[in-house]
Image (cartoon, rainbow, N blue to C red; front, side, top):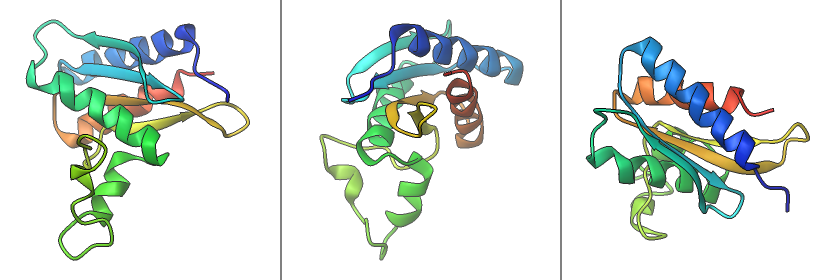
Length: 134
């Protein structure tokens, strides 16, 4: 199974931090490998302590289902086909800020999770991290 390298994980974290700084926010950023194991993590100075676990869970959720966490959230609303899914797998996060990371062949090699601001900012920072992985 293809896997994200440590160099790629660090590149994702660095790019995410640059984007967070550009947005004027402090973030917790987690990158997991293809097996959903934590590969890299950073808590920017002053980032919320409560967002550490959220960032890691967003990354794991994105890898478990190979889709953005926000997309899962759309289906997990009351009456939706995935209602209550956030209670599975030891706890998932179903709002934006988690994205799968793919290699050039389109194979998922890991995921990034970001937390510490609005869900819009979290998603934008995660996108910056994904874009840095080559």
